[in-house]
Image 1: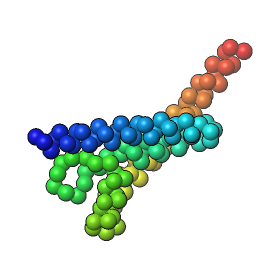
Image 2 (image 1 turned 90 degrees about the vertical axis):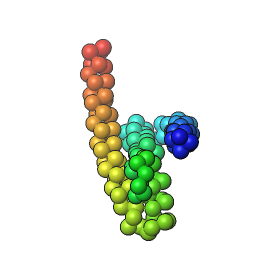
Image 3 (image 1 turned 135 degrees about the horizontal axis):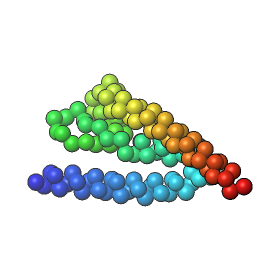
Length: 117
């Protein structure tokens, strides 16, 4: 029972600190322009939030970036391939979704400007 509580508490602390870091990054990334800001924010969210099941027998998810670092240190670079694949897939899908949403919202904004004028 204590393990479940520690697991939930650890994830809560990790997500809370990630949210604070992401909000600070959000402010700084707005200096880069609209499209680069969207892509940078997406990349950071993917790096922070992509979960993966580690190599151990435990059925608990850990952040992929941590799994890559710890598997590389503990068992060599080959052991981190699974977490790296999950992170790469999340990055590609996140960027595609971010670009799609960016262009859809840009088109809607342009159409609404023409209706006003």
